[in-house]
Length: 254
Image 1 (cartoon, rainbow, N blue to C red):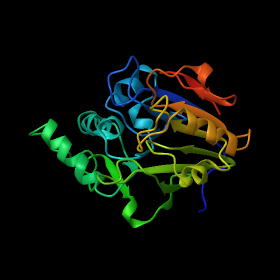
Image 2 (tube, helix red, strand yellow; image 1 turned 135 degrees about the horizontal axis):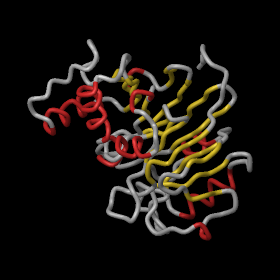
Image 3 (cartoon, rainbow, N blue to C red; image 1 turned 90 degrees about the horizontal axis):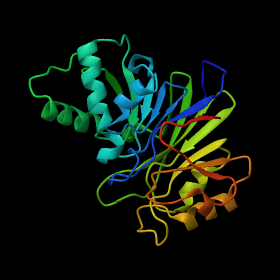
C-alpha cells in the first residue's frame, strides 16, 4: 500500500460512543479520526458529530467493521442529511463488507419511503462504496487501509478490523471480534489499537473479554496504546497498565 498524498499523521481521536448494542449508560461505540474519518457509524453518529462541532460535510471516509445495527445504521441518517442539506460536493468514501451498499439503500428506503436519494450524481446516497469483496487493501484520500478478517457471528456476516496509515502514524480498530491470531496481526506496529471488550470474563466466542485484553497487552509493545471500547460495566482498575477505557465524547491525542 502506498499513500500518494499527504505526509501528516493522525492527530486525534474523538469518541462518539463507547457502549455495546445493548442498553447501557453510554452511547453506541464509534469514533472520528481527525474530525474526518469515521470508525463504524452507530445510529447516533450524526447527532454526536454535531454536538462535538464536527461538520458532516467535512467527513471524508468511513470504515465499517460489520453490518450489525449499532455499527452501521448511522449511515442511513447521514444519507438523509446529505440528500436534504445538499452540503457535500464529493461523496463520502465508505469501506465496508460486501453487500453494505444494498443494505444501506434498503434501510434508507424503508426508513424514509418517498425520499429519492439523489445527493450526488452517480452516488445516490451521497456515498461511494468500496466493498471488501474486491480486495482487502487500498487507499482513500491520503489514508492507506488494510482490512483483516476477524471472527464475529461468523455464520451470519463478515467482520473486519482495519489498519489505517497516514504519514508515519498507524491506528488499528477491531470492531467486534473473538480472540483469534489475526487480532495480533491487526495490532502489531500500530501507534494506537482500539479494541472492544464486551465481556468481563468467559468470552462468548464472538467478543473479547478482560483476559483477551491482558493477552493483547502482553503481546504488543508498550509503544502501542490500547484503547478499550464497546464495554458494559468494566472499570479502569481491571485493565492492565497501558490499556485505557475510552469515554463518550472524549478527545484523545494520538
